[in-house]
Length: 375
Image (cartoon, rainbow, N blue to C red; front, top):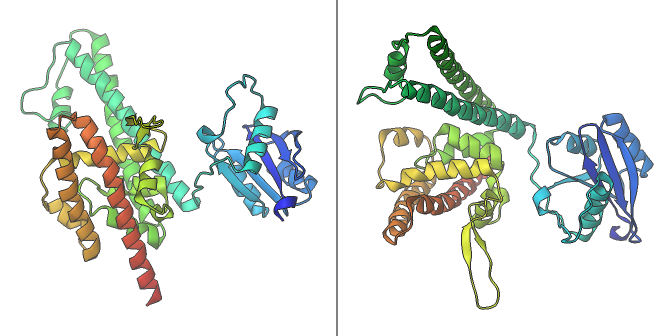
C-alpha cells in the first residue's frame, strides 16, 4: 500500500489552493490551482481517483481547519502541518504558491513534516472565546494606559492608598474636571473606553464559564483538577485545556514543556555545550498562562481559603500532586534566586516545571475518569 501511496501538498489561501502531488515513482509535479470552496475540493478528490491511496497535507494558517474538516468528511487522510518546522533549503530564494505546494508534497512523502494537533468542535469553540477574552485584556491595558498617562500629563495623581483601577479609583477619576472643553471630551472618551472594555471582559468571562460547563465530562474533570494548583484559577485552567486539548497526548511532561516553548535553546557540538534563553517556538498562550501562574510560587507553601475552595470535591491524589508542586516549585525558585538568577528567569524555570505538574494532574484525572466509566 505504501508503494502506491500518493502524497498531496496544498498551499492554501483565502481564494485559491495550489495543488501538487508526489507520485509513487518519485515524480513531484504541480496540478495547478483550484478555488477554495467545497465543490472544487470534491472535484479535486475525484480527479485524483478518490480518497484511497491519498495522503493530503497543508500548512496551518489563517484559514484555520475548515479545509481539514472538509477533506476528512470526504474520507481523506489529511494532516495540518506546523509551518515553522517545514524544512528550508539554504540557497532557495524563489517562493511561489506552486513551489510551496511541491515542497510540501515532497517533504510529506519523505516524512520530514510535523503535524499539529487539530482541535475538535468543542475545543475550538472554547479556544475562540478564551482568545477573545485575551484580546480584550490587551485592549483594556492599552485603554488604561491612555487614560492614566493623560491624567499624569495634567498633574493628576491618584491619592495614596488607593488601588489602581479599582472601584474607588474609577470614582475618583469621574470627579476630575478640566478648564478646557477639549480636555473634558478627552477624559470622557478615555473613561468610556475603559468602562466599555471592562464590561466586555465580564461578558466574555461569563461566556467562558458557560462554555466550560457544557464541555465534555473528561474536559471538565481536567479543568477542575488543574485548579488544585496554586496560581491556576478557573480562567487559567480553561485556557490551558483549550490551548493544549488532551494533555495526556504527550507521553512525557517534557514534551508538554517543549510544546509551550519554555525550554532552553541549545547550540552544542563535540565537547562544547551551550544553552541560551528559552526557544519561544511553541504555544505563546500556554506559555503566558504558565509564567503568570508561576509567580504564585515565589511565596511559601500555604493552603489559603480560595485554594481550599477550588480543591473541594477533588481526589486526594490530585491534592497531593498540587501540594507537592507548592513545595518543589517554591524551593526551586528560591534556590535559583540565591544562586544569582534574575527573578524573571527563575520564574520561567518554575513555569516550565509547573507544566509538568499540570501534565501529572491530567494523567491522574484520566485514570479517575476511566475508573468511573468501568464501574
